[in-house]
Length: 383
Image (cartoon, rainbow, N blue to C red; front, side, top):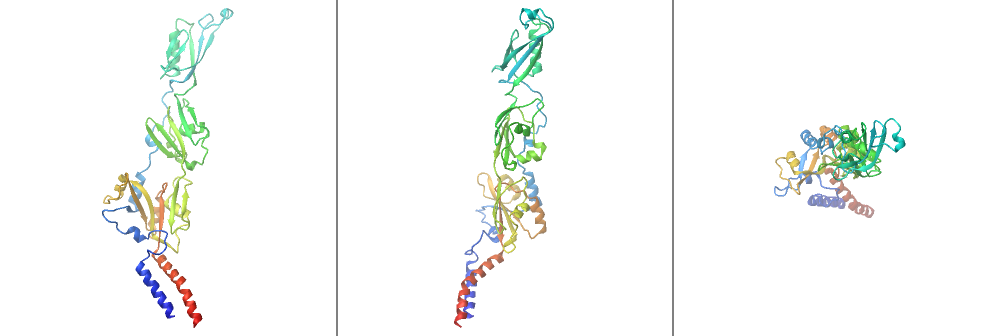
């Protein structure tokens, strides 16, 4: 047994000399992460999650359609534009007028009509109507165009009446591209169409909704939101304007969990609004035999402006306008569970659960047993 004691003493001595640096580990310990960094080399910002942190995060909401474009009314009026196609039908109150037919038709009584062949609005914004000349139509409603043609034909035709129909519209249309069944230029109706209406007119999406982001570009501004936000929040389903560009992008969202978790892995989002509490539960929670409940961390890249609100006194590394931030929870505090329930996970977040100090001692003991057991067994046999 003296040999066994010597081996144990040697193992403990090695463990004390090496600390735990030579032991296998899934990542840094809580002490390693929380050790003060040099003032001139602050590589990341360590932030304890509390109610103030959650409040600041809630204020940093990404841009939304409602906030950026924020007009929930349909277009005020439906006007004709260059490239649209129009059909014009003209009625006269009696036969024998400008638009009557052959002589036999002139002998009859009653009104007569004539349909002008479909024509496209030219670059100068006008169309041609016989006996009325070039009619400016761009930027006008069909009722205004009808009144202009009637005025031009007055005194020439017999009590003319005119109906103008937009047979094809390209100026009052939106372009839909990306992960839709059929990319298309979708004409907008006079009643007003919302984003989801236009997407449905293009055949709908062809991939799972939680993997799709909708990008709306209008008047030089572009905003991208998750598809599920449009489905869950009607205020985000804004009215589409002429010449809007809608692109549906497939971008599967993931976060990573590693360290002393039940099943460290890359986890795909299957919904919008996953919290830290839900994310840890999805990987089996914290391992009882290894995890340090006071060492639960989330790594994220934040803008410098926002990082300064989290820790005004900190001087973090400012790389390309962003700061490496590590959010910290002490799960031994019951209130931390409520904080974890309110903390929203974002794409590419990394969650790390540190090993408990006792876990390192268990590794030393296991290593000692692996080395000492053959020696002890040999000594017992020899005796």
